[in-house]
Amino acid sequence: TYLGILNNLGLIIFLVGILFLFDVCAWRIVRLPLAPFFLTGPFLVAACLASFAGFFCVPLFHVLKIHQVLRVEGPDIHLYKKGTATMGGLFFIPVGIIVAGAASDFSSIEVFGAAAATIAFAAIGLLDDSLILMKKHNYGLPAPIKIILE
Image (tube, helix red, strand yellow):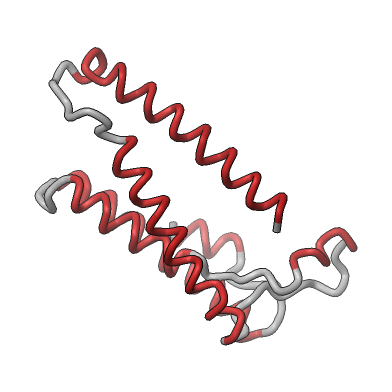
């Protein structure tokens, strides 16, 4: 858990740095005046809200026994994944879509298109994770079917 938290914090700090750099240079790229922290602000809001949602959803997933199914023939190093909650997209994807919509005042066709594509990919992931949980083994959708659906 400690290494996972450090890994996530490092990733968030890296992404905030990249987004902040983009926000500083955005006027040169798009040649339009943009609000301060045009991307960094919504990202930080979404990260905080998703973390807050995860604080409640991950224990709920443990109670509902929605967790990783390990392969018996897999390497021993994968045993640390036992009990790791799965279907995390159920709580962080809606947060990202709502924050993106709110940042664009729910009027941007581009944000709507990106949200539709995100929901489509989330549905594929949900189907894959559901099959894994129902079959009680680590084989969800076969790779060729995932590619076709994507």
